[in-house]
Image (tube, rainbow, N blue to C red; front, side, top):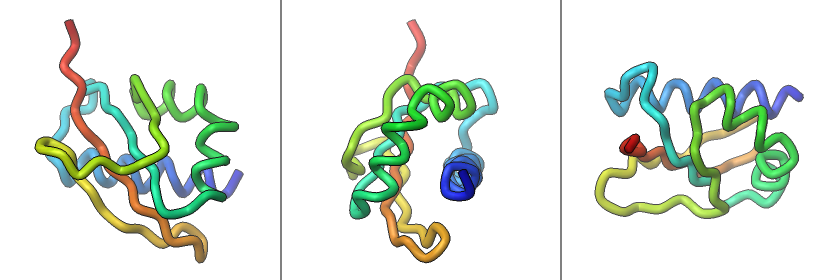
Length: 88
């Protein structure tokens, strides 16, 4: 649970740093750490609802429009990416 709260905190910081609006939906990428990726899969619905994440994928995408950052989550290094999802 501590990892999940910390992950949510880091993603919220990234949303702010990327200049996203509070209501913007995102795609979240997680790479470089199987433990964090497994937690994200287990708590996927909670993360999606809390972060307005339309998708969570197992790799960070360094494509155009993605905001990528490496984090230390309670001693576990992980690379996260967030990308704004355009709502139809």
